[in-house]
Image 1 (cartoon, helix red, strand yellow):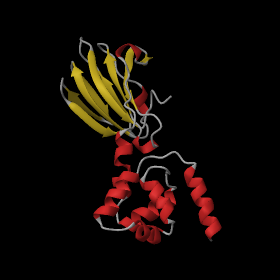
Image 2 (cartoon, one colour):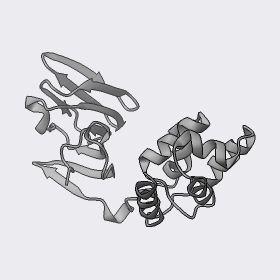
Image 3 (tube, helix red, strand yellow):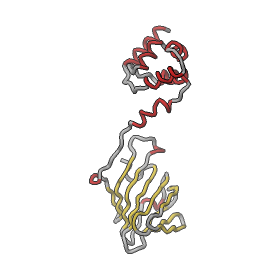
Image 4 (cartoon, helix red, strand yellow):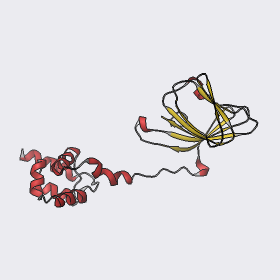
Length: 203
């Protein structure tokens, strides 16, 4: 048993620390618990707990769960700072990807990368010339769409219904049925559109 514990601790030392230590130490001290008590509750050595608190070692997930349980704290509290440090994604004005479908232009303004499918999305500016309409949604697709008309006046054709959308109007709908945005006017229509999961700029 002691040999297995030593092997675990050696593996722990090779991991890159995520700096949970300070939070764990503050909670432990606030609760008036000693290193020995926490170590016994978590089933690890006192030395390992000490090293984790000093950010000398980054704990494996099972060790982290055991420590969180011993201190009666949740993982959201521990990972809060790590989440805030995730990189901000910027698409510069001159670097936007564009896709044209006939005479309708889609200009990408945001995308998620490396996210779970159900959370992934894309956002773009749609420019629809006079008398034209979008195409890809004609047969429907998985997911949802959310949009706002930023210029002009459009019509959303959804199944057998039509919805008039003026500048400033927003709309949301399940995308699994046929839909399109049509410009019946003599002026250009522009809209900001969000689709989840990504459909046009998925790569």
